[in-house]
Image (tube, rainbow, N blue to C red; front, side, top):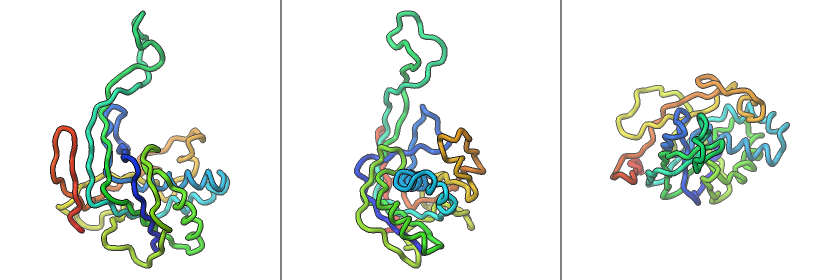
Length: 236
């Protein structure tokens, strides 16, 4: 069965790909399976406690996740001043002395013209009520500034609607010509809780604990300039 929750973004979305650097802050167009699972895990930790969230993590890590994006997406391109750890010692008398130094970073901020719907494939009906409670409390996706508002109670469907895209499954056939390819990161189905616990001290390994799926999103580029890029869905 599929559990569907629809959210309306209330601020600009931003989520760098897993391989991006701090200076080159390009953003993905929509949340990744990893971002969705971290949002749910954050809710579970805050509402149920670390012990219960740890017990629920194997179920959460193995979730199949689908997504339906908005009709239009606008990406704003901008350069901004950032602070980053200093390399070396500052010159005597410099204005920015201290452990951080000023720099310039490229950033993209994404405007979703419409709603973002998330589908979770639930295999055990006993988990439905618990996951619904988590979905009701999700208020951001991607970076913490990417705030969202749930539009209504999540619903349960036997089949996934045709306008959803499954984000974390292998590509069984060739990649379609139409669409925008995005690298979507996810946790491996056997990733232990300690790997996603930022306080455990254990690092997460790319390709094993954190895997990439190349997903084709049903969008086409409509127009662009130095400051923005506009995408529209072609399947609606």
